[in-house]
Structure formats: structure tokens, C-alpha cells
Image 1 (cartoon, rainbow, N blue to C red):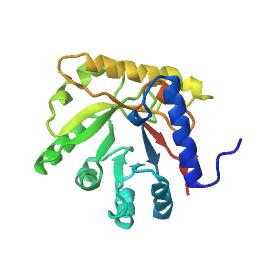
Image 2 (cartoon, rainbow, N blue to C red; image 1 turned 180 degrees about the horizontal axis):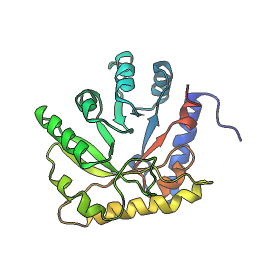
Image 3 (cartoon, rainbow, N blue to C red; image 1 turned 120 degrees about the vertical axis):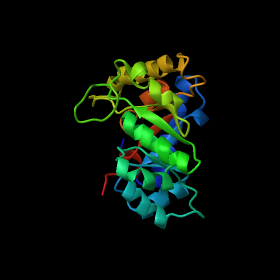
Amino acid sequence: MPPPAGIAERYLEITRRIQEACVRSRRRPEDVVLVGASKTQPPAVLAEAWRAGLRVFGENRVQEAVAKSRELQSPPYDIEWHLIGPLQSNKVRTALDLFRAVHSVDRPRIAETLDQEAGRRSLQIPGLLEINLGGEESKHGFPPEGLAEAVRPLAGLEHLKIVGLMAIPPQADNPEGSRPWFRRLRELRDELGGRPEWPGFPGWLSMGMSHDFEVAVEEGATHVRVGTLLFGSRT
């Protein structure tokens, strides 16, 4: 069956599928955030998604997001912008002008830079550690092996609050192929949460995209990043 034609219909279909995945896994739908992965989509398309009910938008590039935000200012657009792509040190200041969360903390240095700049502004911003589950050269992130020791110094950051993990697992032929990777990310999150340096670790899990978000929800995703299925092909 082809996907619904309009963004409003697609949004309703995706939220319905999230709810059904929550029922299957005995979770509450309100505990799963749909992040619209809006890379390369024009502001008019984002505005249509906002009118449909989407409130959290994930952008990969800082400058692109800033340009869009100028056309989608509040009011009326009460958008919560999340950075889901890699961040360069020289873009940290601009990023903190806009983004409410960073899903892609992929190395200690960028975490420290974010913490320092947020401190200068007396801000606290949630960040997720990006994990390169498959050890792929084309992807960023911390290796899963020895993760707890590698990120121990980040537990003490005052202004960048590490609240969970994010991953883009290796491409699978079908959604079920992603399940072991999602399960592994959840296990890594739980391992961190059991260590004394991470007291009260909230444990966000940003995982799952258009082709496998339902499996991700079943495995504990708190944030799913859906782009093509919601917006259509990238422009």
C-alpha cells in the first residue's frame, strides 16, 4: 500500500504506527517523540508539517537550520529544533543560538566545547552520545567497546547534560534486521545508567528512521527520526 499523499495524512499514519508499536511493547505513546528529519526540506514543507501537529524538527546542518528558523519564527511556530547531524567546533556558538538538544555528540572535544559555551550563557542543554554500533568508517561516534570508560569524564559536565544515546545502525534489508542493533544501544544505555558516575541517568534513546522506527519503538526508542516517510523525497 502506498503511503498517504499529503504531509498531514502521513503524520497521522506515522503517529498511529508509533502508538501501535507502543501497545505491542507495553509502552506509553507519550514517551516517544517523533522528530521530523527535515534536512533539505524547504520552510514551506516544514510549516505544513507543523500545521499537521509536528513540533520537533531535526536538522543535520547548523546553517541550514538557522536559515529556516528565520522564516519559521515563534509565534506562531513554536518549533523545538534538535541537531541530529555532526557538529563542528566552529559552529557551536551558532548551534546554541537555536537548538534545544544535540543528538550527535560524537567525541569528547565537541562535548567539552558545547559545555563551555553553554556555561558562558548560563544554559543547560541535553546531549546524546552518538554510538557507531557497527564500527563503520562512514559514520561518526564512540565505539561501543569500552564506552563507559571512554565517556566517564563527560558525566561531570555541568552545562551539557548527557541524557542518552543515539545511533544510526548499519543498513539492514528489512526492519527486523535493525532490531539487534537497537537492542544493543538500549543495553549500552542501561549499562551506563547502572554506573555510579551517572546517577539518575534519564536514558533517552534516539534511534529508528523511516524504514525501521516501529522496531525501534518496540526496543525502547524515546525519539525516532523520520524524514522521507513524513516529508517525501528530499529536494
